[in-house]
Image (cartoon, rainbow over all chains, first blue to last red; front, side):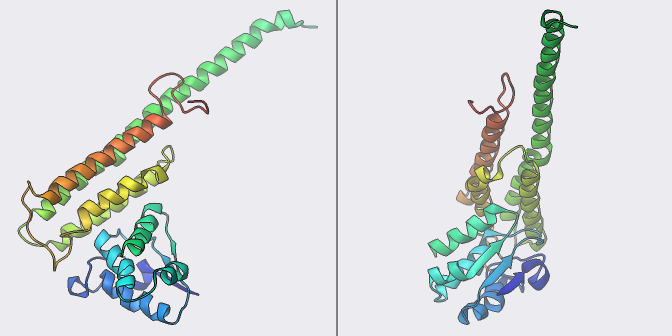
Length: 100
Length: 156
């Protein structure tokens, strides 16, 4: 099982949807921290606390983008678990996975 | 030996004092929570709305303003989480709706287009902010009713 702490492993200021929007975008996070582990069917714990806030476009691209990249919804939901004080962030992310 | 008849006025006085104390505390707690909601949440929500409109109506994408908005949204939610008097899970729907109204569309460098104050996006931000405020008020009134006994009871 892999634990990814967004604030310390990626950025305290994650922002933007696409890589063209900046180095700490949702697409960059997905490609670097989620897709490689999912391809190996590894379980990933994503720790969301510690960052200075998340935009919906970042969250949608990071997590909803997995489905558009070809990963199965059930696989994504079974392999990724979210840790966050904010329950709204967890709910929003799962909505993006479901709606993608 | 003190008889029950002799002690009963004291018992009644003690119960009366206890009841007065409990209801007075509840009324004070209600005022305290009201003030925290006004200062820590509603004022911040108004500020976020102002920042968001300023950002989306700006001539060009401003990364500093975007960071400030994300920070303020984060602080608003943390303030609500710390305000244990209100069950945060009951607010998740409006928190998501509000965050999405501001940061889902037109919030990134590659997609940014200057908005008019009469645009749909700005109307959605206004509406989401008001829905958020209304839901906070609803949850506050549920937890702290404006009438006696001033707190939520199992039968209320």
